Image (tube, rainbow, N blue to C red):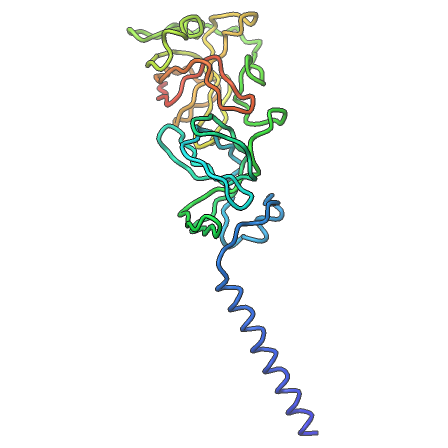
Length: 260
């Protein structure tokens, strides 16, 4: 009987050692390129100790650097000076191209064996945003989406100053105002918070017409007004801003400050 107990105890000890060794080996294993199917359900389970949910934000910007390796395309996205590395399934893109990427997950200290390079931070995305899918609700008519319409009779007094314009005037003068500072006053019709690290506003002042599609102005800002606020916006106007994948704006004001 003592012999049986001794053998059983020895078996338990050996099993514990094997489990401990396997656990240690797993913890010491270097990070490899994730499986291509890095959707939320699969990716977060396999790499939950390394990945952080990016909150479902679409990523957009101009490609500053790109390379293909190991079945993936690595992109350095420049969004007005803020650079972010993103990895997607291998795709044909080029430096200088404006892109919109699907939401992804951030990994820190990621080591790419095929590139022999470690990224301090990198976001893994499923790829370019499909022009047929419903992306952030800030696209305007003239792109793949439609402008925000309202039955409300809006009438907001024009801002003052040399750089002040109505919404209609911004559309009419967009060619000469491209890449220039402008001021516009209007009513906030819609707010989309935290998309690509910015807040997206739809602003109207009662000028323009639906037929000409020049009643609704999209503004990006770090400020966060509420729907219904009358605000004065100061920012840089961009004409025919193209984020790629079908997301194009006839007129958009970016990097704006918003004052009530």
